[in-house]
Length: 204
Length: 182
Image (cartoon, rainbow over all chains, first blue to last red; front, side, top):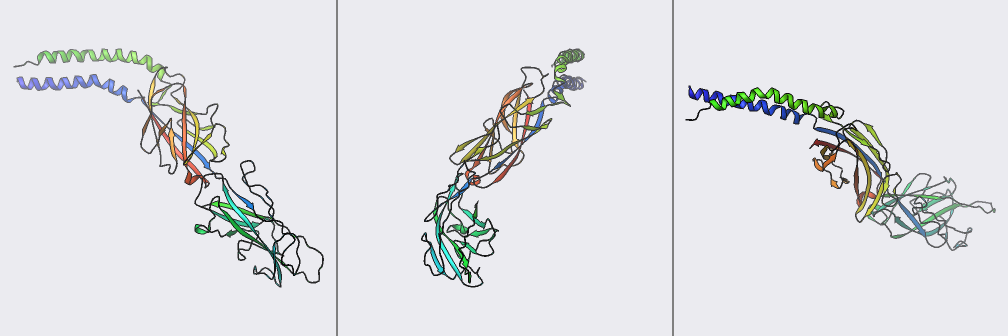
């Protein structure tokens, strides 16, 4: 009887303690938490450009933060005619062309231009170059680097010496610009030819 | 032989006082709760994000926010007001500030909460810091004494490593925060 009373009194004490603890525990549970989510977005961009140099190449701009990172330059072939070995500015002239753009004989003018990738962001392992003509030319043929890399109004990938045909940062690479002009039978009037080669750099 | 009768009596006496003590406690805490009612919605502390005068716009609603840091670059920095770019050896940091308010203006002054934060998913290759604490997918303590009822300034910092800075890529990361009343 004494033990039963002891056990009962213990249970009662536990119950009493529980009643005392419950309000405090309940308050701790309520209104103590808060959650929120913040979505952060950003677009990480790069700025790379090409600087041009070489014989008959005007300096233009190298591409920097004040001109939207677009390098520009002008290559002047000068004047030439059938039978010349060089143009008036010293570019090479050959009769015939391997560009495959002429139905009959061509006069081909070529001139190396040095390209240097100037990156204003941090270095990538290399950059690929895609080149295209700003204005489609159905008469004359244009090529860059090799005669097989014929340019059109759509992009042509220009092979570089680096891995995967890439161009390394800050390394000067000579690329020859080819212009194939079909012979104009019976025409003696001088013809002016001009176009713009657009190049797009993509980081590897 | 120990008699438990006195203890039982004491326990019963204690039980007898419980309602009175609870009522008394409720009456006291009721004064606090009256002020806290606006803070607590369904038993939760409200957490809201705010744009600061010198930070980009934060859009969202109760408990959610979105901040667009715009275009960032090692070379050109940022074109977004309130976003700065700090160049580093192996990349760059994008920095901005966000405002956060725990509870509302009616909340009791001087109350503090602890804040943990984490990322909903890994942000690789980016590293995201909130108030100088790098966030991972595991909850990490960011602040142990954050005041309620006022808009507090928090620094958001993102490290962009060099191997991504040359490529255009988008960053989107969701930061979760949880606050617990101290």
